[in-house]
Length: 414
View 1 (tube, rainbow, N blue to C red):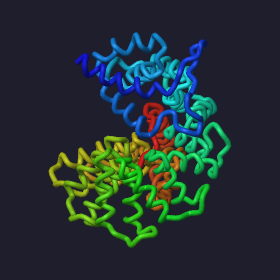
View 2 (cartoon, rainbow, N blue to C red):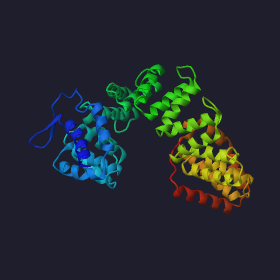
View 3 (spheres, helix red, strand yellow):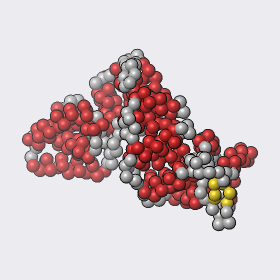
View 4 (cartoon, rainbow, N blue to C red):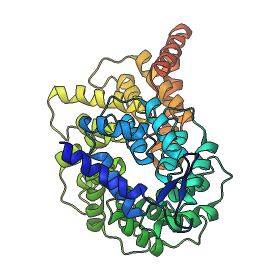
């Protein structure tokens, strides 16, 4: 075990050697700023080393970190952030990232920027996140360049500036950073900061996908699925969806499920469709939960009575995940008395929940066809259930809907 720990330490010892420490304990880059202090290949070695950390590594790293070694400090920060080698402690993670960053090491500076962006161990502060990303980016650190680009692209901590974003994406992408390649592809696909060009988008998505970047794999699939600048090819799309789905991308899992459900690019297979919907659902996709519920409800996965109860569970899960079609469906079931006793109070409560979710989120922008049908149906359903209830009963529906909203914190999902 000790030999393995020393080996991990050797990797980072080489990487930190690009710095010297002055009398004040501050690290100074030996090479010019325009040359990356930590290359993309070295960053990948760092990622591999930190992912391999085990509890037995901590006693070796701790004295080195306490002695002021920036790489050891960063590794301890990662250990406390991901809880694999020690008990998770965001405050300790922040402390060690900050110490590493104060030494001038760009890997630590980027980590501090990400901590500020996410609020991990420190109050969320997008302006500070940008400041630290810039410190690392100015030293040629590709991951920070990509992160800084995202800040400009989305206007987080800086005024929105797509042209500036593309500049940083390109610098990162040309260093073979997959995240930078992904975002440069997005920029070309959306025509933000650069002239729209699906051919260029596909080139950069493929480069990122070649490094296992799941979002890029998914985007390649979308391009082929929709015939965007290429001949439409559902089979090729399904191939890329599977790559991304295997890497845990929930959107790809959903679209792969739909490919199996509809027999587009793959043979029709309802069980396989249900499997991938379940995976997407487990990652918080309310849309996947709802469609899985519909498969159970419609008998596509068998007609045993228990299937309807499983469907109800999936609909309730979809509602908690914030997808307004799920509570609309539950309301319909109780309104019409399908398989369950007709219950206008429950129906009205679910209709009101659906209305609240629609108003609170942006589903109309992300899934306009789904929401168009919901908005066509929902007002009349609320009106008709209200007609069948006394004012006191309708007030009870409103109370229950508010109580449900208070108890659940739905998040926007696919």
